[in-house]
Image (cartoon, rainbow, N blue to C red; front, side):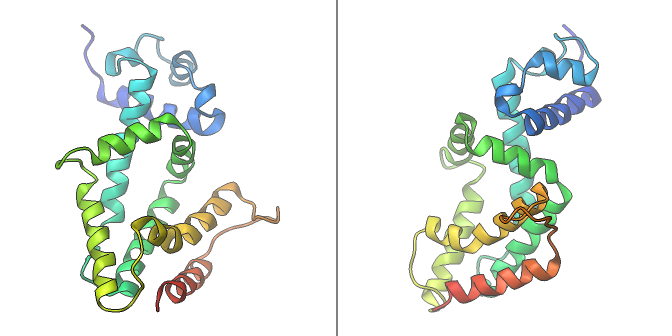
Length: 203
């Protein structure tokens, strides 16, 4: 049995993300991955059972890291504006630092891997998205009790609270706005959008 090489395993994951971002999931193959890494076609199978296992494990590992980064310093008992500001700050910083991962998760979100990811994230009492989901539900519930927002489902809240941020970041990573003109996100744009989100959410 071949020995696991941690640095080579990291290379495999990084190149897999790059290929998926560039060519899409349909253009991703183990042969293409091995060539990009400069390794034999059998090497990825030392770390993963097959292509699906590789992709799903990358999604789960990176999803866990992303969830931790986005929850940093987040207090579910904070006011609506303070708590949401922390979430926006964390998400903006993470997406600016990891531009490839934003595009990678865009690919995943419209695939069957996304459903597997959510099932594994939330299944059972020990699903590792449970703390995040519980904190978010508690945050929304607290805001409703304080009269800051109307009662709404987490899905409606999510669409209003984060839709503008993700749209601006998508424009930024594409380098083009919806009009086709060159686009680069700025702190000023982000917090201008945030102020409008708060106004839209508040009673």
